[in-house]
Amino acid sequence: MSKWLTASVSPGKASKILFQIDEECEGMPPFDEVSLVRGPFGAFRLASRQQVSTDDLPQHEIAEISTSTFDFESNDDYPNETHFPTSPWSQNVFESMLDQPEVMSLPFPLDFADVTVDLNRFHQILGVNTIVEGQSFLDTLLLPQSFAPSRPSTRPPSIRSPTPTISLLATPENQVPPNASVLLQHYATTIISALTPYRHSKTPWHVLFLPFVRQCFAILMLNDSLDNAGMCIFYGTLSLSAFSLEGSSQSSEWLKWAKTYRTQAQKHAGVMLKHAYDLPKKFKYKSVLMALLTLVYGCIFSDNRDQTEYYLLEAEKFIRLRGLSRKKSRKVRLLHHCYAFTRVFHESMSMFNMNTIQRNHVRNAVQASGLTVHGSDIPVFRINGWNDWHQEMMLMKSREEGENDLHLERPGQFPATLYPEIFGIPESWLLLLSQVIRLGNEKDSAEQSNTTHPLGLKDFTNRARAIEKAINQLDLTSQPITGMERPAATATVASDPQSQSTIDPDTQQNMLEAMKDALAIYFYRRIYDIDATILQPKVINIRDCLIRNQHADADIPYGSAEVLWPAFIAACEAEDPDVQSSFAQWFAHYSRRSGLRAFDSALELVERVWQEKRGASVDGDGIGVSWLELMRRDFMV
Image 1: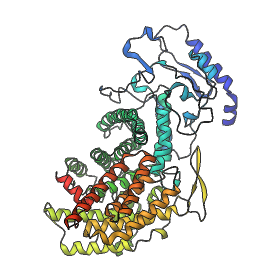
Image 2 (image 1 turned 90 degrees about the vertical axis):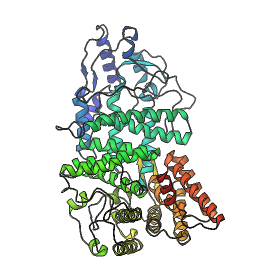
Image 3 (image 1 turned 60 degrees about the vertical axis):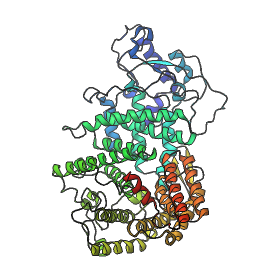
Image 4 (image 1 turned 120 degrees about the horizontal axis):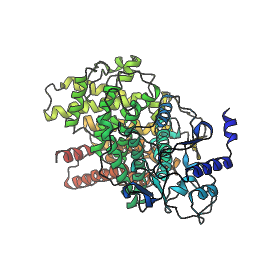
């Protein structure tokens, strides 16, 4: 049936239908309501108001799609969702995408950048004379002349037409930004590659974030409306991609776009959060959580720690109040894992900022809700709930216990975990990192005398020894990595529709070795604060693992965001100048390849640590100089 429908609409017929729609609109009075539907399932349609000459319109209703007139710098507040509803068609698309299995049939291609139309006829309809055979729809209508697709083009570089300026009757809310295609293509390749380890293609970014933002793009292309959650995801994604392009090209123009789109995303997020807890609900649960996570990733990679924490805490509150008590689909669990994974890493660097106003607000909101029965863990990173680590790690968590232990507070095994499938790391590794953070927070609270019930020295020592033993005995290679292929020889896997990559069979092993040694270094620095000389063998091993993976991923920085943490932890402890130079080159390499500011910021802090160590060694006392001391000093100031 579907093949028959596809064959029944040839390119010639499509152009003819478009031309008929255009002819029927001619002669209609300006501002008349028009609703024309043609083709199977109304694939060709013209809805809402008639396009007219700009001479007949008030100035505030004219929107030009061009680099000189397209401006999103607006301070106007966005309307409430009840004033700006998503159309039934768009709503059905989103519901089918979020609720159905990962493989589904859509009413249009996902990648509009790959859609080629009969431009001769299309230009005839629009009255545009510049024609380049083979140019894509978006190349012709949306891309400024200076923009080019990120993937290789088959047409000669010298053949390029100027971008036509087309007036559309639309509010700024519905327009597609002129560089959206370039930014989404960059997101689909570079950004997702940085977030995705080992080139596997079933991560949340492949099955949730990328399809969703492409749907947003398609809906806006049809001049339809999106709710605030969808607009937040769309603009947040554009902002993240623009920040990356700014970092790799050092272009102030991309930085301007990145900040503009971030402002738009945050405005939509503000409206969304005001109504996120309304009943009846105005947003789908997954949409809100995806919007918050999109902003989190944007803040992390643009090195904005304050806003990173803000949106992480908003995500925690939303999950605890709306997510833990519900039956969790696979896609909901994927999003919960993304939040928890990111939150644990954030907490590992936030040990001196535990009692902020927003943290207290989230804690009080959760406690006042009466939903603590669903989240049996406490909403703070402190030690609780175990005495004998080895014995309790042998216990199996029930599905409810495993899914609702949001920040991995309690020991135990949970076979249904998705961390190996998403991040290529067993849950036991992340569980131990969470325990080190919690024990370190107990130590800091006792030293600063800001807790009424400090952990006793005996309990602290016993827990520290148990965690240390578990880290040293952790065998990551023996734990199955579900949802991924672990080939005995090199294999080829498509990481995106346009390219294929070859998997190095040692890549996963290098990653796991680096993560394990970095966890040990973090423990010894955070809990015992030992001399860095003892840690040098692990530092060098991490450096070697990172360099081997760098050579394997010479073209695309696969999983670079994930190994940023072990690289930072190890580089801060490096003593030998040659080893320090190797780490500096590694950070610089991935900063250039990904364009993400997080690599530059990490290197800046690492170089400060090295400088402090050199100054301290000249004075004859290099003990106590560490990234912990620098962060504590900065926080106190």
